[in-house]
Image (cartoon, rainbow, N blue to C red):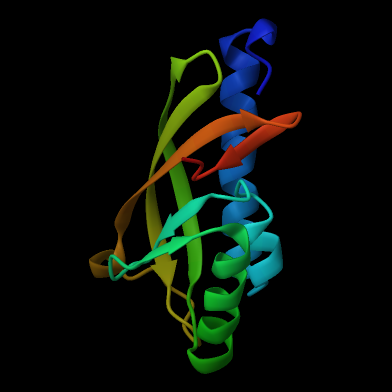
Length: 128
């Protein structure tokens, strides 16, 4: 996240990070989802469980995708806010189309937050 490019491009980069996270989940690819996190990134599951590190995120999601029919996320970014020179917070509303269904289930809607930090030439989520 190159803050010298201006707030619009930082916002675009963080939005792209979020889209990539959802795309990895929707493909049921633990590796693609986790690739968007810093090595020491953190992910909080729908049940409040905390997973720390990219490797553990991959391992946990591989189990989830193997053992559970997961839905497809549809997200709408509500805000991206730069809170420090190399840190931004994204807030989104996400809906879920349950596995085997074709419509969103409003009772499954959630608020999602991504803390994005510039690391090694690009934004990464969930970094401490």
